Length: 405
Image (cartoon, rainbow, N blue to C red; front, side, top):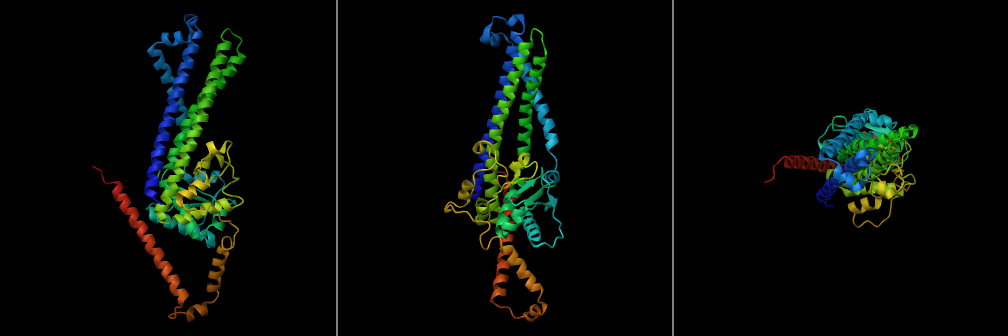
């Protein structure tokens, strides 16, 4: 997989979608501007009999600019308010989902393995080791939250611990670290805030509409029409804004998948994790409260949306797997297949049997067999791979600060 090329394509598409989002906001401002100008003209004697084009021609530039400034101010103020509300740290997001922090001193095998993988990925990414939170759900999923490396956290489900092996966990956690390093959380928070600002136009329209219904004066009908217009603009803008937001989120998922391969130098791990999601009855679906609000943060599609193809925050599993393994045969991995769900138990039994036979261990000192040599070689290979990952990260960081002429 050309992960550098994949990342460049995902970033380029994100910028294109961002420009489309800006264009949508500008169109909404113009539509609101036009609605208010027409309403103002037709509720005064000067606008009677002018017609639609006459109203536009008779409205001064100063009036257009004044209305535009007012609309932009309303959207910006509502967006800023929402941003302050949703910018809570990663711990707040984890607690909102009902997750509990894993004890760094845990002796549980699955939890200990997860903490070790997170620590390894943090070393590879050269960032502080984030705390790990656990959601007690069977769906195979994970998430990262936080505005930066200082307040970032990693969250995983019980299904992730029980069904994924070490290689697959590395792929999933590498994906989540990419979200932290690439600022995806900040991007999503900004989009959520702007969408709230657009929706606020609809909320104002709803309030104006109620006021028009209560009023019995001469201009009650005009006020009601203004409310309906603002309501339509606000909710239409939110609809299309959510479409663009979902498209942005899908592109960032492709970017994170490519970055996970960059961290681990192994597309098989993350690809197999995705295959297990496809082969699991529960998939990546979660039942935790507030999951829908932060569904874009997860590794897999955590909830189902109406018109799922348009509003889905993640690309289809098939597309993600084919991007990682172009020669994939289309077969998923059943999470209850032999050697998958039982592998963790077998590893634990192996460790337990070793620990319960200290005399046998002492007797083996100085007399390694073929199994011992193979295990030692595997550990050396793992350390070599981890060192090369670290060196690659340092080289890329130095290149990122080197000016291009």
